[in-house]
Figure 1 (cartoon, protein in one colour):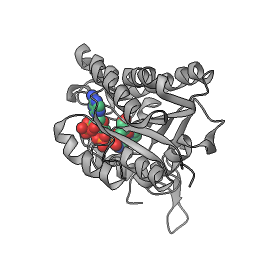
Figure 2 (figure 1 turned 60 degrees about the vertical axis):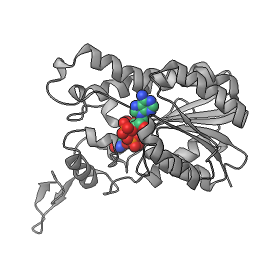
Figure 3 (figure 1 turned 30 degrees about the horizontal axis):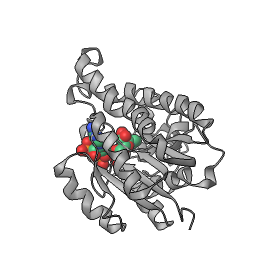
Figure 4 (figure 1 turned 30 degrees about the vertical axis):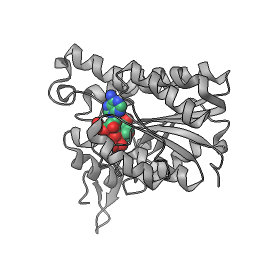
Length: 274
Ligand code: 0WD
């Protein structure tokens, strides 16, 4: 039981398809005690049964990260109910629709500000507010995507937010290292979740990744969950500031691999059909 005796909070479970759900499952299976947050009342209905599944019905709290008072209230509740915590999972992102469609240079400033606030600044704010109740050797994990490192069609504003999130991970890791706290990010391959539904042509992205990733498949929330559990556990005690790809190897590809047809002639593998 790798996580036995560890307590933590997971922000960003929307339903049982969420990446955060996969992380919660892996941590609970290894003995962790987990608190959950929900964004609003309609998501509360989904999160409460999930908390029950993991024996956490007494540890479910509201937290819209765009509201600083809710983050402060979360700290008070966690302190009262759990005392110290050993890990935080930040699995939250949001961009208004006009940041994920159309011409990149048309992105309105108001949408830019919302995406940066909810998807990036919230990591800094959550860590700062919860720091007084974080144990020595605590671990923080956030979720990013390859669209923050390279151009991905339609990812637009979220790509810029993920780039900022990845650097935030590194600067936080340096700053909190002196307190013994580690901060890492997982860059997950595409997974069909609620958040993913907002990205245009997502089904094509899934097909493309499956066809071109070295492992020739798409990653699952269980697989991201297992890697997340490792980064939250003491197994990764010397790992911080890392952007860890859990994407079936897709990110190493500079160009789609070529294949050979039945006559030994080289052809370019450009979609899921070949
Ligand atoms: O392909 C994917 N699904 C990938 C997702 C690949 C790589 C990374 N990610 C990232 C996402 O960008 C996000 O940071 O993983 C994280 C989790 O996303 P998810 O599991 O794919 O999506 P989902 O199950 O929808 O969880 C994200 C949740 C929100 O769900 P909705 O669908 O309601 O937007 O983030 C939460 C909310 O529960 N959220 C907030 N929580 C608190 N305060 C807020 C907010 N203001 N806004 C969104």
